[in-house]
Image 1 (tube, helix red, strand yellow):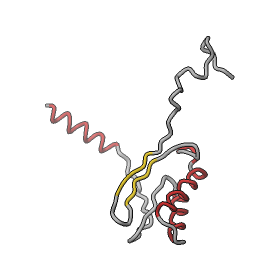
Image 2 (image 1 turned 30 degrees about the horizontal axis):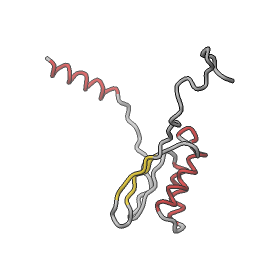
Image 3 (image 1 turned 60 degrees about the horizontal axis):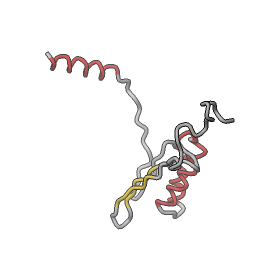
Length: 117
């Protein structure tokens, strides 16, 4: 009985999924740039074509995202990066923003709970 219910639920979920188009990026033998906005990725690709390295392209793409997709982050915000260097080393950087250690939930309220203008 549980198996039948599972199959029915799975079938309903699969049936309700809409077909989505997969956008294909620029394919290259040596590099790629991926971001949330095509315009920002194109800027990163341009940097690579002009002789910049992957980190140059990452910074350019990140700065372009500040303009093209400002709600995802900004100059004062954070992000993350996964990388592989030309000698095969891999790593990641997590530079998500954090509140100061002295921050607390009510820091913008007065003693009566009213918002401080």
